[in-house]
Length: 387
Ligand code: HMG
Image 1: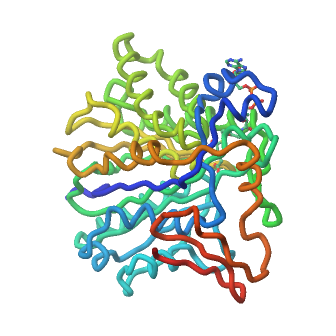
Image 2 (image 1 turned 90 degrees about the vertical axis):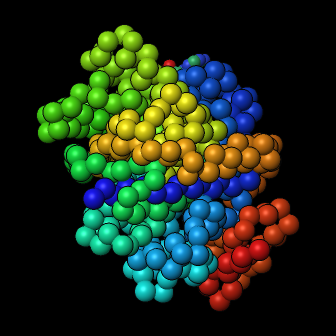
């Protein structure tokens, strides 16, 4: 029996920042951001969205009533959780009207935990083939105004439904993974922004990738020629490009061109959304599936997931017949068409406008038309609404 991703859906806030505007405001050459970093736009989180509402907004768009009743586990991967105790999954369960007899859990290991969630889902469904598991990877990447990491911020959520006989892709049992205690990026409890050693983190990412790729090939007797595409965690899209370039010399020039074309397709959306932390590699997978017309059923795709701190994993997926029919292909193009561009001043104001104290507060809802919104805080309880 095959197990894998049956449905995928995405949500990002309705606001964005143009990287050319940011470059001008920060005294940088726009090409540094556009080419050197590989980002053109960045999703900006309004106070009325958080990881719970983004996760609910993503999942809601793909779930039928039958799915809602059949889901046996809700796995919520994030490193921007809204509570130290209660999991985001419980809020999502209620907002979406999901099965009461489901397990709910939140996972954390920087950008890696979405992958752990997906594998946990795969293993559960392998044991319980009738089950459906909802995996949500939802995050807000925040480094702070006028920091080196500012150009690599972003926000959004990816939702995936894992089932037996999946319609998009099977998850193959070929994973290799590794972890090590490394201080490349972290966020202490007292801080709303990440602490990062940017250059070091990029080097650790590449070192993990190279070591794991060697290990993957040894353990699975496969090489780069066996894959039609390599999908990466994309904290900024140049990062994945650097990792891919590290291994491209292993194959012929024509294969290099094919893999580079696939990589370009896999970063179309990430360039305009920014870092999604836990969801980044899966947004990149969505971008590949929706923008690479040369892919076909039966093609194998390799995926590298990386989370600072640090943990990495490589595994592969196999595309299923007519996978295109299940994709929600208009989601991202529609978002890009209608989302609102912010001035630098408006972005800076929004950056500092979230619920940061325990004081009761009613948020201004006039500018958020998403289905699930955060309306404020009352008696230290976050107030969510379906509209
Ligand atoms: P920086 O110091 O601002 O940039 O930091 P730089 O000076 O290194 O320049 C970046 C690139 O732009 C360079 O290219 C320059 O040559 C080029 P490279 O040498 O890297 O190929 N450049 C230009 N190109 C064209 N035209 C120009 C021009 N000028 C310069 N005019 C950095 C960049 C990424 C370090 C910073 O933004 C940062 O700290 N970001 C956050 C950390 C990060 O994303 N790390 C990635 C690996 S860790 C990870 O993936 C985990 C993470 O997602 C968190 C988690 O797991 O939870 C972050």
